[in-house]
Length: 193
Image (cartoon, rainbow, N blue to C red):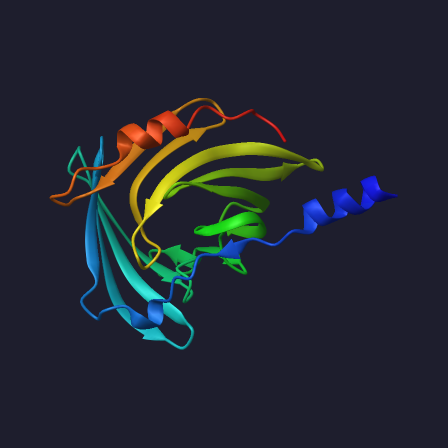
């Protein structure tokens, strides 16, 4: 009986959002980040009710551009994004940034996915394994190792997907990045949970 109770408690342990609060976000908040193949500018547009709207513009190394609207809640967790802001939705929100085990639904234009994120803090680095449900089993989608600013937006990140493909990006800033630390921590995860 104790084994079943412990299993139940582990599987139902909620994720804890860091105490990010976008209600204190400056009206002129923006940042730029750079990866190997693109540059992204993120700019706060306005607050509407309990959601905060941002405009994200990405310029790729081949010169093409993408623009998207990104809606987040007061804890900086994404609720929707896309060219009109709602092509992709998360119910109730995605799990970044939050610590612990978090479940959500990803409503993508092509399909709907049941998702799980298991996140722990290693120093100031958030290590998150994200899974999708496939025929009742949780299958690893990717591992993210990320640092966040005071408002819950990424500063530096490393991603390793379930096929071993990697990507990384850094906030454009005069201070040194933390990519070396992220690469050391973000070892390839197991493929299933």
